[in-house]
Length: 284
Image (cartoon, rainbow, N blue to C red):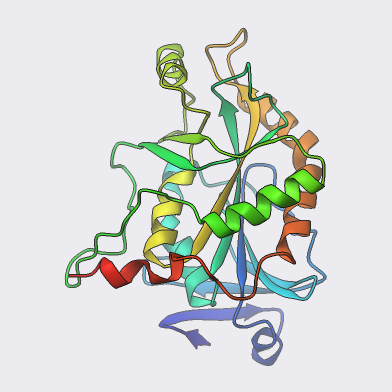
């Protein structure tokens, strides 16, 4: 099967059964500890081939409260892909080729302001500070057509409002704005780096938000980041470690599932934001 230049193969199902779920409306990028698409009512699995190579895993497509949704674990379903090695372009391209116009991106991170932002709470990021040092492929424009997308505000205001309003209604503790510092990983920050980020007033530090957000922008897809602090970054009393992150994430996984599940049906069918027109003023 092909769609917009991308080939995909149904896994243990038929072409006709897959077509029932296309085009997909909303994509979910599963992060650390969030690999089970348990909110789906019924699903089909497809293997997607993109011009940028394979995505992190097969894509699960199906229905959630009547909405057509795609789920892709960014690290692979067994967490086999480290953050610096994720094929971000293939992941976003796969979603775009299936018809996705909105992406919900939950991600584990560390709190840089523990006096205000506690583990187990949520930050709906407004800004990104990139510290991946150019190590990641972060554009679809590599010659021929040249595009310079505006990126002053990385995330969709319409989608952010839906998630924020839903979180408040569910009684979840959230922070409606904040800056996500994206480091290259897979190592955690040094104490000096963490103190620097804290002193800049940044909110959380993680390893995956960039270049997901800029690639979604280039693809004219709305994106919202749901940052989930699992720990106090290394300048705290105890240095962060992977085991502690996974345990904290496990405790909060039901809250993020509830938030996404409830927000999905509240996303407007038609977009009133400008995300779908970014390229109008970006191409030379």
